[in-house]
Image (cartoon, rainbow, N blue to C red):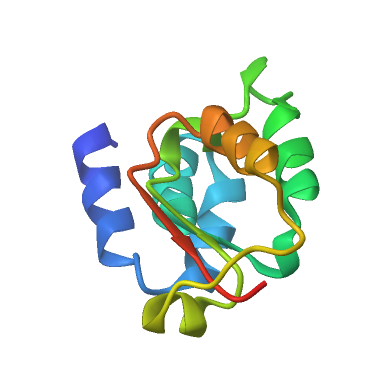
Length: 117
């Protein structure tokens, strides 16, 4: 199947998280576009920045290269997503170094929202 057709199919499924998850592990042809829709916006609740960094540092063994999530994430939310959309609060348990490290690990992120964490 041509890649353009696969992309169109995955784009139609962008709101169906369960099906995208199944597609991302069903076929390498589906994986990249499905992951794009699954991880374009990432919310890290309870300031689990260290856990997120560990996940991003893992290599993708199936493809033998660095984790492709690094290039997919466009919006990063730290804290409760509902509160992030309403107002910005200080981060008592997250340091500037932690935020800098995670933004360096996600070079294509263009939006950072910080909520009450």
